[in-house]
Amino acid sequence: MLHIANLTLDSPFLLAPLAGYTDLPFRQLCREFGAGMVVSEMISCHGLVYGQAKTRAMLASNTAERPVAFQLFGADPAIMGEAAALLSTFHPDCIDINMGCPVKKVTKRGAGAALMQEPQLARAVLTSVINNSTVPVTVKTRIGVDSRNISAIPFARMVEDAGAAAITVHGRTWAQGFTGTADWDVIAQVKQAVSLPVIGNGDIHSYAQGLEMMHQTGCDGIMIGRAALGNPWVFSPGGKPSDLASLMDGVFRHLELIEESVTTDHMPGDIKNHLGRYFKALPESARYRKMIYDSKDLPGLRQALESIWAGTTGNSNWEQIHPQ
Ligand SMILES: Cc1cc2nc3c(=O)[nH]c(=O)nc-3n(C[C@H](O)[C@H](O)[C@H](O)COP(=O)(O)O)c2cc1C
Image 1 (tube, protein in one colour):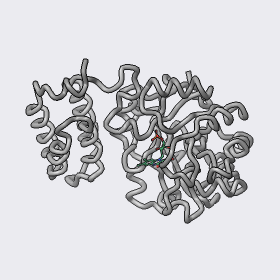
Image 2 (image 1 turned 90 degrees about the horizontal axis):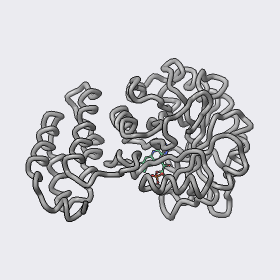
Image 3 (image 1 turned 45 degrees about the horizontal axis):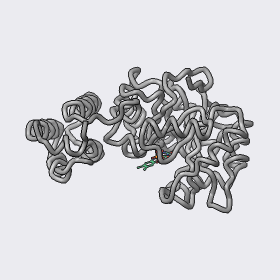
């Protein structure tokens, strides 16, 4: 059982924040499929404070997805504090601070991974967010700036000392971006060094691997990002189903949740991107993806998925790819 401040999570497997993907429908889906907590896409503190419509729209939530953490990014302690106060009025279960994103757009303003090389500023940001929040505050970071500057241990001590409720460590450096492999040893060292809950992250592709990371590193929970795309079953021991009917159950449930939350006629490309991923391992995935991408609106998308389902019923290729 994973405890973060006053929260008791029913699974130590968490959905990682993924910009462009961890919107309300996907978060709710992952909770339904077993994730113990879900994290929003990163939200700009400036966008929130200046009331940008696109940023405000990212705050959509409901009780079914709880517990949920909303993630803020920014490097200005005062604005981050203001954003945290505003976010608190929406009553998320946690506020997470992004101190690991390597994307230039974020780091050039000193936010995300850039905060790792400015621990004093990182502390000021964290303190300001804690002082202005009514909910527990957590931090998500990486193991260091580059392989010669592995700073996760002193950084985690700082995060604990400043009063964070948990820390997530992605086992890569800022310099690595998403290349190479996640270093689970450093995650284990962080766990040894602090007493706040440590959540390990990076390169977990299955439920069994998640358990393996917990076993190997001693971490209290794990976070799964990319492996959850098109595969919310990664949060349950059984994994991705080997029969098409169960696979389509997941796809149609995801679509249903999308239909409940998208209120305009405009269908964002993210939705197609999400749904196309379910069919990744299939021989006809390119054709399925084209059918999905060619759909113009949500009813069209539903129709495309229904014809994929109808057209593939009894398709023996599925059994070849996923033997029982
Ligand atoms: C498309 C994409 C978007 C991401 N967006 C965020 C984000 O908004 N905030 C964040 O802290 N990390 C973000 N990450 C990093 C992931 O949360 C995670 O740390 C990383 O992908 C490693 O975990 P994984 O191997 O399970 O995917 C993103 C990663 C990807 C691939």
